[in-house]
Structures are given as structure tokens and as C-alpha cells.
Image (tube, rainbow, N blue to C red; front, side):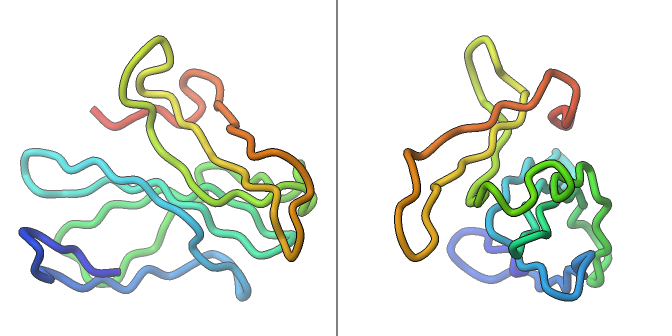
Length: 124
């Protein structure tokens, strides 16, 4: 993962995923005043669907925490493509994930999953 500031690469990180097959499909970050970024990411690959949380600071090697393992619930039924902290409105600070329902063919409309308040709270 590369941190880009002002259009120029500033720092490179190695993020270790939690499975042998998973890949990052989406992420969102919040940068604190000290420059540390708190990151939410989706790790997925068919049966693997996990929401990861990690920080990007001084360490080059990053081991994420599994904030929520959705694999046993979703059973490869939803294809999560994006994740973000909601920025405004009645759901500000909650986490929302985007599902495109597409793999080779479109299997349904795009959907958003809104996680319960506090399930994955926004950083302060």
C-alpha cells in the first residue's frame, strides 16, 4: 500500500492479509492530526469476507485486526466492493459497504449494507 501526499508517493506499507486467498476490494481511511491513518478495508475471495481495521503510521509492516468476519454469515452470497465511514446525515460515523451483485453476470441491483451504530465506529 502506498501513501500519496500532494500527488507524490510518501510512504510504502506492506499489509499482511488474514487469509491465503483474500484480496483487498475496498478501503476507507481517516487521517489524524499526527498523520496516522486509521483504515477500514474489505478482504474477500468467495468464502472469505472480512472487514479489517489497521493503522498506517511509522511501521512499514502492518498486520490488520479482523473487525468483523462476515464469511460465515454471507457464505459468498454478496460481493462487497467498497466500504466507507458515512460522513454526514443521520448515519454519520456508521460504516456502509457497497455490494455490486456482479460476477460474470449481473445477479441483482447494487445494494448498500449499513452496519449497526457502534459495530465499526469511526475513529475519533
